[in-house]
Amino acid sequence: MMWPLIALLFVALGARVTYYGVTEYRYFLLALAVWLLFLNAYFLFRNGEDIRVIPMSLCLISLTAAYGPQSAFSVSERSQKERLVNILKKNKAILHNRVTRLDTSSLKEIDRTEITDKIEYLVKHYEFESLQSIFSNDFEKVKDSINKAEMEYEDNDFYHDHELKNLEIKWCYRQLGLIDKNDIFDDVPSKYIYEFQKENQTLIKIKGYDLLLPDNGEVGSIYHYSFEKQNLEKYINIDGIGFLSVNDQKVKFDLKPFLTHLLCEADSLKKLKNGHKLLSTKTFLFPEETMTLEKSSRLYSILIVVTKIKF
Image (cartoon, rainbow, N blue to C red):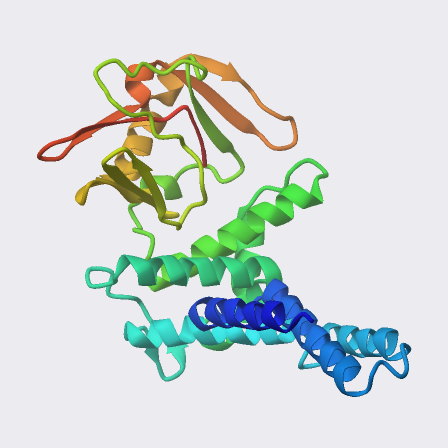
């Protein structure tokens, strides 16, 4: 029987939903778990009298998940929006059921990450208008203004739509005070994607250092490594702020000033290529010393080598 596996599936889903809310994928997994639970109970107590129950129940589950207010898409949108509102209320950024600016000086990093993640998820999955109910602005006018200000890509609706969503997300961040009005990256032409590369990406100098930590993983996740008696943790968020700790000695770093410097120096350095015609990618080649950050703690020296970065 599958009872233990079904129980583990419910426990795992419950933990994810409790901490992060419902998404379409978690909804579908939950629907699958309910379906398997029903089938196991049916065949246990009815001895599998009618196997037509299998396709019939699957059809019913599929229709329930696809249409109506109880569908995966409706439930996911409500769940993610509810979590966003709750965390904004927790940080006193909701007044009369409408969003106000956050006090970023007291905003915890974990809350900041969750707010940005929820906004990005809602805009990309359910459109900009899904947030209209918690903002006092007229989103139709805001969207028109963004659309008129942005030059369309050459007959390429996909890239234009993608860029518009990014601008809509940035607009939400700005309303919440998560983007500084004097931020240099607000002045970067949004029709371009900038790519900075180290001159030789295959070779990295490690002389004088004991360990080389690979650059992998997702933004917003903490990664743990261990080697002999060394315990390491690595984290970086969507704003380029993170830390690296070795045996509980934490070194913090911020990539924003680093990128600002690269952006200011880009035009005076060697340009590698123009990029794709429809998605104007400006790619620049930098010497290794320019793509390097040095940090240190009481006992450890840390060298961060950036091989490639896009924004």
